[in-house]
Length: 156
Image 1 (spheres, rainbow, N blue to C red):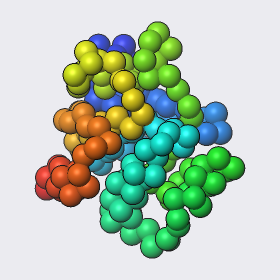
Image 2: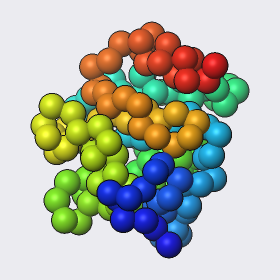
Image 3: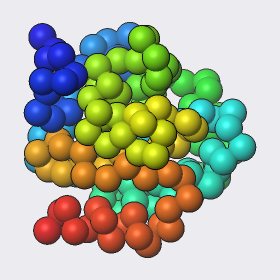
Image 4: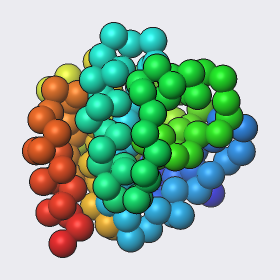
């Protein structure tokens, strides 16, 4: 059972829905540094963010597959196999308002950003430590090396 967002201590207390409609407990990521990103393949900045996240995923998951952004978009849109691209992909959600899932209510409460908890664009990145606690809220404009340095610091 999920905790109310205001009482949660980490992302590990939440479940999310995968692309096949299955509930997935985030406690499976205990001990891992996580990047949680809301995105849309239809957004103009999708390729930019993909180029930011893909090298990180490949570095930490030994993924040697090389795909163009167009190939990755095609896989997103035509398949329910969400693994192996930039991490696990979960079902479409609303990240603001009353329909936002508990996970996003928790993330926004812990790291409200400059919009008072509102997520104003796709590709808001929440970086969590190994204990599942959000430590940074970033936007897609972050430099890849800065993001990699942040991840590296949390892995130490």
